[in-house]
Image (cartoon, rainbow, N blue to C red; front, side, top):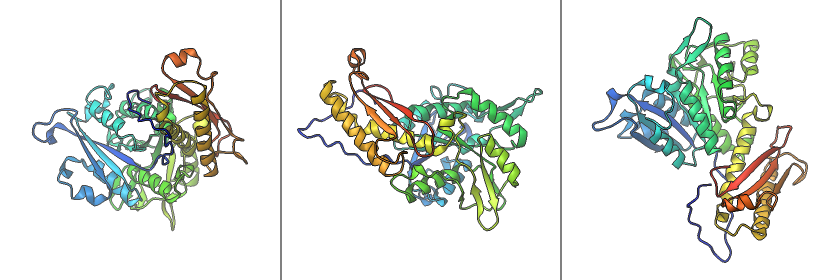
Length: 395
């Protein structure tokens, strides 16, 4: 919740809101200096909202979109995506992407634009998969895209209802892939559940490309086909469109090994094509191991934040607490009825508290309203606490 929002008060304030959409995607790309348009500078950004592949193919600025990003855009729409942002940032060269602090440096305009477009729920960056991997004599694998990937995961966590779909680095297979991924998971465990990794790369005939665009389109398709709460069904055991085969053909033992470490395998099946055979986040925490659990909680947190924006400048007292507690409970019951929350009856596996206990004097003096929501998403074994903080930064 960002302070400074103007709230218009009425005798009876309408507080009903549409459910948060979780199918809108963004593909991030990069334009090296030798392709900059006249008068461009590092960090300049192109943002192209699209509703179909032809919107990019016919756009006058299509020449500014790199090949990797164009391929991902096409795959997104082929796989059923409906709304997509293409954001291309000017950089000096690919080596610049290997540095740290990009969100506050050359890519600051890109990250700011992502923050403004809060409806974006899915991110992919196919260009990252092409960055080089180096293997030290000690066997340590270093991927040049790691810093930016970690910054994007932090960004997704700060926006809450945003999820990063990553590609395995090009040419990384078997034990080297597992070794790199195990180390990557541990760099920032708190953000790992806001992303998922897919392997191997895909072919369309002789054309080889990373899978993130096709996978992201499948996420969007699944959510739209199962409206209004499609995030309860992550894309698993679902065939990809517009692909002919995988870069690496795996047998069932290899597929099991990939899935066991938390990577989502893409499997070629006779008669079905290439199938997504996993729905795991990159987190090692059992509560956040599965994509649907992470995204259900993220969506609910964002939904409750938007539902209760009206309360920011209301008097922080008992009357407000009761109204907010009632409204949040009603929204949770709606989501339980839709099948997002566990329990055989309403309220069995979720609860809401907005009271003096959650809002002591220090909290009220800070201009905040705290609501504690405990819930258990379908498919999980433990309840999760959402600390909704109105009037402060985030949830």
